[in-house]
Length: 236
Image (tube, rainbow, N blue to C red; front, side, top):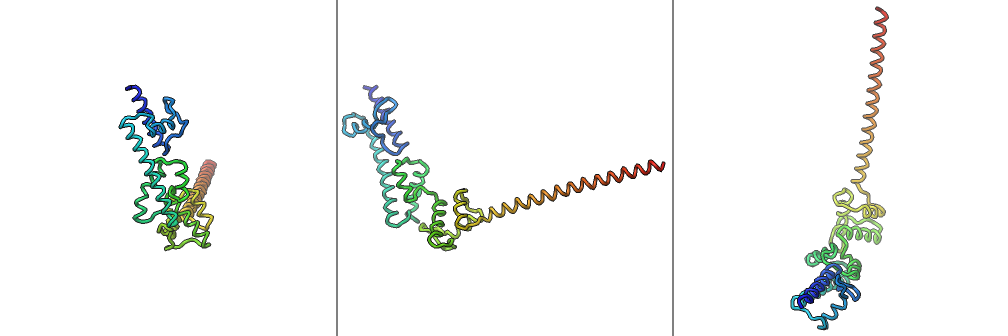
């Protein structure tokens, strides 16, 4: 009996690990290390056909609660987005930002379908990417770049963001930088770096030219000294 209980405990723990890794219960046909169909085992456990201890039942109940909480949070985000056209802001945002971070980082596993739903509403995008998309959308709609005071639906100032991107105080990926270049944003920090490269090259070339000139003058001096010594020797 003890051996069977240990085997069932291993099965329940393996199901738990699967759920935390993939964000959903294993389906029929998914085998455990012991070769047991985990999908069928869950069905048998729910119908009472598979006899479990209180501890084993508690593990499965926690998993059910875990999955329902995740789905509930996603549904709340979807509802907010459909009603407001953007993700939660201000105090409401602070309630969800940690949740969204855990989904993005993989700290809380989600199913592939849940991930796609979150991607649709932009919940898995970082702040910079959301800002870049907002700037692109503003340009597409208005034909001009946003100025200071033009804010995203989340309340962030796009004009200030552009200034930060231009002077290099706010970091962008190469891809984001290229996208912003196509709508007319220039990057001063890149221009400064280019000018620094040119100045360095000019200084290097000048130093090289000066070094060559010094060598030439030294050679001429040595020739004059040799000629002078030759004249002295002829006199004597």
